[in-house]
Amino acid sequence: MHSRGRLALGGAGILKDMALSQQLSEFLRARRAQVSPADVGLPELPGTRRVSGLRREELSQLAGVSVSYYTRLEQGQSVNASDGVLNALATALRLDEHERAHLRELASRRRRPLGPPPAENVDTLTRDLLRSVGNTPALVLGRRSDVLAWNPPAHALLAGHLSPTAPDRPEDRPNLSRMLFLDRPTRELYVNWERKARAVVGNLRQVAGRHPDDALLASLIGELSIQSPEFTRLWGDHRVRPCEADEYRLRHPLVGELTVTQQILVPARSPEQSLVLVTTDAGSTPQDALTLLRGYAS
Image (cartoon, rainbow, N blue to C red; front, top):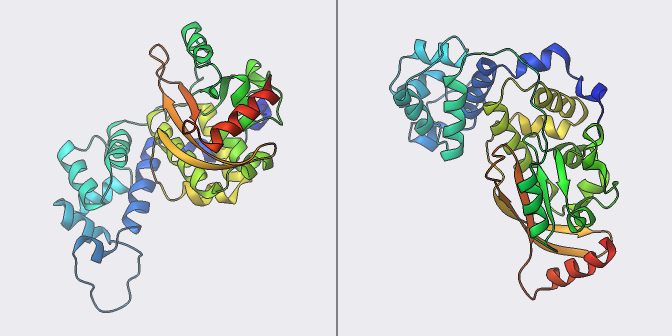
């Protein structure tokens, strides 16, 4: 699905974008723009506002910090803000628990140089776990959403147009984020593509905050930013949401429409990886569709 050359897209500008100080600055500005004075009980003053959302002065007032300190923080000139300040800003910006954790990640680390990322391989115990789920579609994802392994039902359900052995070759591994934005069959699989895309981008945002030194992750984000205006739009929202469990309506080319639940488990010995299970309600029509699909996969 990708090559070393494609991973190099984006250049120095993309690597700079991955710096923690710039991520913090962009996150604060984006989320400030998404909160109106009325949302937080401030009066709407007469006249035309020059900014969308809260002004720096208004956010500083709500958080109980000086305007000069908040300005330095938003501009990336201040690091290691106290938990009290971060909690106050998170409350003022109406962040949920995942976004609060992301803010702490961005604000508590100094910029680090991008280095060679660790190789991602599937542990023997994780492969045993993948085999143990039987006929349930399941796949193992790396932290950058590379498909490290999948069982035949998952391949037939989510990527039947690709080689079933692709995850075994690191240089050809499918990447679910890239597929969702740049691969037409994957886009057409999801009836509500926008919903799935927001979930994937929100998860990438969280991973980028945790691993600002991952050059391959930076290149993936750079590639998607260059090739997909939709990714650029969603990335600019700075929404943070881990992929945990959600329900999706699929439009499969062989078995038609079915509703599935995608759930994620974290292997005990590989906390950077995810085991994704795709299930349906017992005795439902979608379950019958998966049973039919297993026939194609065998």
